Image (cartoon, rainbow, N blue to C red; front, side, top):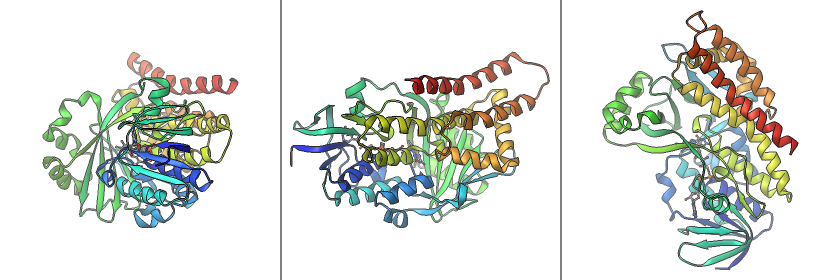
Length: 424
Ligand SMILES: Cc1cc2nc3c(=O)[nH]c(=O)nc-3n(C[C@H](O)[C@H](O)[C@H](O)COP(=O)(O)OP(=O)(O)OC[C@H]3O[C@@H](n4cnc5c(N)ncnc54)[C@H](O)[C@@H]3O)c2cc1C
């Protein structure tokens, strides 16, 4: 193997394959180093839903055939079930755009196959990077490889990030278990489903005809209980649609579960221009809003498309800020149990149910259409006011006040951070 490249990419997940391909196609020599031995990604429970913006990015990078091959190219948006027997609310992608659902391993395997055949790219599987600096990396089995730039696309526990910034400061949010149901369909086969209920909320979607994936979010306070199959079956029973209850209980009893931890790291730091982080290595949030893969693909296109690293950072910070805030706010809204947060949950669903513009706005924000903080603040304040009016009691309760104040703190922190950065 050569010992010097223009670019080393650490990690052959969606972001790493995308950036290696983008630089390879632009004439650079690229080493793409992946720790998994061949075939391993099949096992992994991770991103399985791609927004239309991500599908477009796959096409731009010449991975377009994947959508036909591995996907179920009919993701039209989301259906939210508020619980308590209320009818669902449908949020469609704007302008009839279409997303994609798939087995994570199928997507990664196909991307690796295509990138391995891209001119200029040397793809090495089964190679783990031990450390990185501004001029190259050292592999676990000893050798050093040099390059002009090192790109860390090595996920949430990024070695490249650690080499620059020390131990990761990402925060645990919750645990999530994936359950696969064969032989059943989804109530709305072309949509992702969000079921609000217990233990916080569930996601469900078809990843192939008559194959449904359920993702159960389990707050960390249930750390001990979640290992007990009977507890899990009982906890999700009433939140699941009736047709999924029996098959889900069987899968849980058989232990056919894939657990993952969810963490949060704000997308603020992309490295120093010679050591660069993209994808989850740059930042990650709860998968509820399914933005992780799309973010990594767009990072790749923008990084390869500019020689100005600072412009890349500015552009990505601006584009990711509002979707990240939306993701955090929705996660809290769907999972917090205090009375005011429950009232806020009802107010948000009501806003979506009765206002087509708000539905379109939310879906647009998810897709990064709306970089100004105000696009988030307007509907957020409307929902907050709706929640205040919709509280059970007319008395001003100290617990409600404290909860409302905590709800204002999060967007305020983002607004202030944005203000400080835009002045820098
Ligand atoms: C349960 C769950 C559900 C999710 N659902 C969605 C969803 O529906 N939609 C969505 O868009 N996102 C979703 N996500 C997030 C999504 O999976 C990630 O954002 C995405 O996989 C990140 O891609 P990446 O290439 O940056 O990192 P990864 O996918 O983590 O890939 C990193 C790669 O780097 C390799 N690697 C790591 N360290 C080294 C090293 N030292 N040397 C060499 N190789 C290394 C790893 O083996 C891996 O292949 C979900 C995540 C979870 C956990």
